[in-house]
Amino acid sequence: DAPLAEVDPEIAEVLELELGRQRETLEMIASENFVPRAVLQAQGSVLTNKYAEGYPGKRYYGGCEYVDVAENLAIARAKALFGAEHANVQPHAGAQANAAVLHALATPGDTILGLELAHGGHLTHGMKINFSGRLYDVASYQVDPTTFRVDMDVVRATAVERRPRVIIAGWSAYPRHLDFAAFAEIAREVGAALWVDMAHFAGLVAAGLHPSPVPHADVVSSTVHKTIGGPRSGFILSKEEHAKKIDSAVFPGQQGGPLMHVVAAKATAFKIAATEEFRARQQRTLDGAQILAERLSAPDVAGAGVSVLTGGTDVHLVLVDLRESPLDGQQAEDLLHAAGITVNRNAVPFDPRPPRVTSGLRIGTPALATRGFGEAEFREVADIIATALVDGQAADVAALRARVGRLTADFPLYPGLQQ
Ligand code: PLP
Image (cartoon, rainbow, N blue to C red; front, side, top):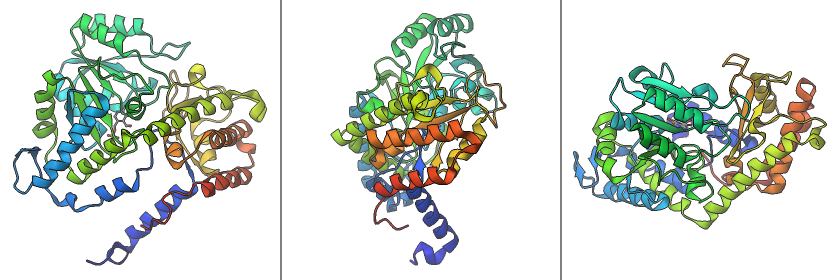
């Protein structure tokens, strides 16, 4: 029963260094967040020892009386939070949830229609070497080349032409709302099922600050670790008529034993997501992204603006367009990293640069909102980023790093926590 530092000092050091990195830098990867300590505690618990294949009350293993309570709580809370008829909380991750959704709604060889990866879609929505692209006949829609928004006439025309079995609405890099009612109407028209992947914006939906896909979609999948700020994992909501198919697609279709420590942590995350404090945090997340979009493109901040795709944002992220910038995506990511700000480079639609370099940055505000940032801090963050991107290779990195250091010192992360 020796502690980690004794059993495996090399891994103990990794944990310590990573905690230090998270504390001392500004985390702006749009898909990341900081889980509350209650979630860390549930995940680092003895529930990791338990096998529980099956569903509460219908397990293939004995001794599930307590983990059943945890899973039932997670299910009930997910349903209540999103107003869903059915919830499956077992997917290990977003990709596993999505594999199960396609397993339930389609047969290999069927046509699926989703947003193209290079235009903001996700790997699991039909990328060539992902399971979705290998098993299904993939059709995709792109954003409009001038507005950079999804054009529902294009979605409809493609759906009418390709007659997909499943239409996918959802994204990994898109700064605007989707029209779920219009997607549902198109799905009805062509006889397709509508699947919404709300992995990115689920926290905003839970807070009532983003239109909900639940009334419109046959099935909604999500992760728990992005805007919701829970454990790294997935879940699926559906209409009652799809419940049996979804459950059997998750287990035994795609997975074996659920990760019960993570299921318990999901229950805790859903409980927190129903609170007023959570709603206020999601509001700060949105406000932060608005401030970022405005100040990055405001010429008074750093002498010259930085272009932002679609001219702004409705959600928790901003897509910086570097097509006209001397900095490419890789250089911009590296420059901000040197200043203590973590973001990821991201292809912009119709990107002239190769995918490993890109002409874009995806910058998100959820983790900093969780850290406690409000308007004043997001203004300062936006100005640091704008200065870096406008000054480019001539930027005074040490001065920018010092400004980042003042912000991280003012908002301590996991105070007192030792790894
Ligand atoms: N769906 C969307 C829209 C995503 O953005 C992501 C993650 O980036 C996923 C699914 C997959 O989630 P995971 O990384 O947990 O498999």
